[in-house]
Amino acid sequence: MIDLHTHSNHSDGTDDPAALVRLAALAGVTTISLTDHDTTSGLTEARTEATRHRIAFVSGIELSADADGTIVHVLGHYINEHSRSLQDRLRSLREHRRGRAEEIVSRLSADYSITWREVQNEAAGVDSVGRPHIADTLVAKGYARSRPEVFATILGNGSPYVPSLPAPTVEEAIALIDEAGGLSTIAHVWGSARGSSSIDGYMLSQWKSVGLSGLEVWHREHSRVQRAQLLRLADHVGLYTTGGSDYHGTGKPNQLGEYETPPHVLDKMAARVVQRVSAGRVS
Ligand code: AMP
Ligand code: ZN
Ligand code: FE
Ligand code: FE
Image (tube, rainbow, N blue to C red; front, side, top):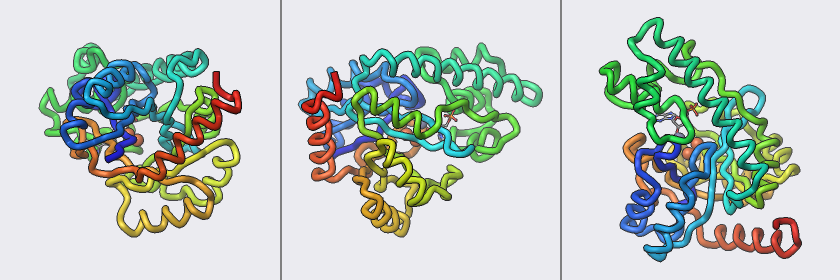
């Protein structure tokens, strides 16, 4: 069971990395990737725990990126988290996240009793802050019952409280992952309520020409029909197809291992990484 898409409490998941890996092992996962949003700070702890449980670990990240005004998520697998250029860029992306989160809270405070200090307390220890942490604060203050409810009402895409997330372009995100020796995959491309349903074969081909490797097909936000369409599209463009749970602890209903990457795809990914290293492309 191969799950290449999970989040810990270093971004907007709720389990610490070791607990997440422990739960994954219990669920029968044999290969796991931790793909926190815009941070790699949980990888060391997760990798150590994976070794302890004898499950394979793939270093990962999920970058938020801009495609003509729509946010698209780009998974990076097998990245070298010690890459200096990667870490410099991630630090700046997280600072932009923080600034935008403060702006959201400032806008909210006109209509809700909420302060930046309260959000900071709610997100204590979090490396990469986002709307989910503001949502948790609103829930704690009794304005809603759950994160999904906040996203469906107060903080959804297009909400006047939510300025756009300053993000690199998809091409830049792919280049950043590539420089760090990783493989890029577009996550949940046609996922519900993401506003990215217009992404088509032409755009994927363009991204492939700058280094995109994969397309996430097996994900709970894709219907059966969409999965079949995406499989054909990936085959046409020449991308491998991955799957993952997008587990967020109690932040989302997603369960570890609920969607998987086929073993032959993981073999292809690993072979590609080995090939790059032997070609001297990665230090
Ligand atoms: P941000 O990156 O700050 O714009 O926040 C977006 C993140 O919120 C996504 O990456 C998801 O992990 C999370 N999210 C989006 N929609 C929902 C939802 N309905 N329920 C829970 N979490 C969500
Ligand atoms: Zn998330
Ligand atoms: Fe995502
Ligand atoms: Fe995710």
